[in-house]
Each structure stands twice: as C-alpha cells, then as structure tokens.
Image (cartoon, rainbow, N blue to C red; front, top):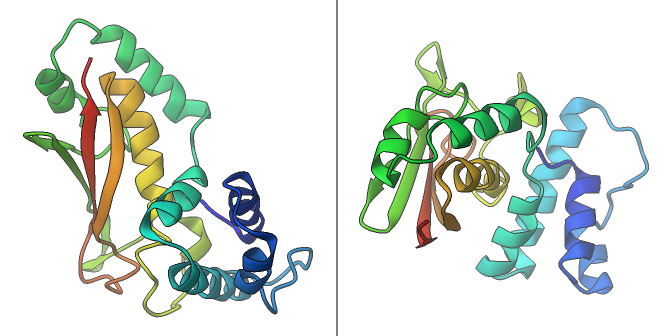
Length: 192
C-alpha cells in the first residue's frame, strides 16, 4: 500500500521533476508522524494532485510501483502455483488461480484480463488497503487504487507467465464509497 514516503520514492524513481514533486507534497511534512486519519487525508490530497499534474501513463507507473505484498506468503503461494501448473494453458491457469488465497477470480476475454475484488461487510464493499481501514474519508480517486491494480498485475504475471499492462480501474470500493467492488482491467501484451 502506498504511504506518502513510498509515493515520493516512486515519483523520484520515475524521474518526475523535483518542482512538481514539491507541488504534489505542498503542506505535507514527509518526516512528520501523522495520525492514521491524517495520513489518509494526506494520501487523498497527494492523489488529487497526482491527478492534476500527471498524465495517465505516469499515474499508472507511479502508483502501481507502490504495490504491496510482493514478498512473503503471497509471493510464495504464487511461486508454488506457477511451478505446479506450469504445463497448463492460460485459460486453465486462470480458472485455477481463484483457488489461491487473496488472488481473486480473474477472467479473460480476448486480450483483456479483468479481476474483481468483492470484499463486503454489512452490504458495503470494503477496501483491503490498511491506510483506509475504519476511516470514513469520503470519495477517493481511482488513481490511488492503481497501487492495488499493480499488486494483482505483479502476481498475475508470475502466476500466469504473461505480461500485462494496467488498462484501468473500472470501479473501486474507495471511489464509490462502498457501492461497487474493486474491478481492475489489464491488457495482455505477451502470452507464454
């Protein structure tokens, strides 16, 4: 999940001009230890400024680079899946992937892969990102959710032995304030 420091690191890594980074972080002290609620408010502000100053390609690169859970149990589960089902075709792997914890149920149509994360509590779709857990922050830009799209991209590429580009965040629990699930869409640009 992106915090302000990780987003800052990503902006630097992707060679965003220092003056622009300063505009994005204007009024936010990157070294201050804010409360959880203030951190969430800062992320909303940072994301709105990213929307204002960067193009779609830059937003995708910067936010997807911030993806969490690329190591640990999820990475191990994906490595095991990849080895176990190496000989299966793409459509078979996609069907089997829904059996891996936290990997959702991706679907493929032509060269588009779509995944939907449908976590609900009390009939309200929830975001898995701990930056916003138990905080009512209001509507959050879908740009923030490119981080989560990057998480699934990273693991799907390894599990399915394909190359993906993030096409869009179709909907998100944060952006819709719980009305819709998180749905991410990817272009398949290289199949094994």
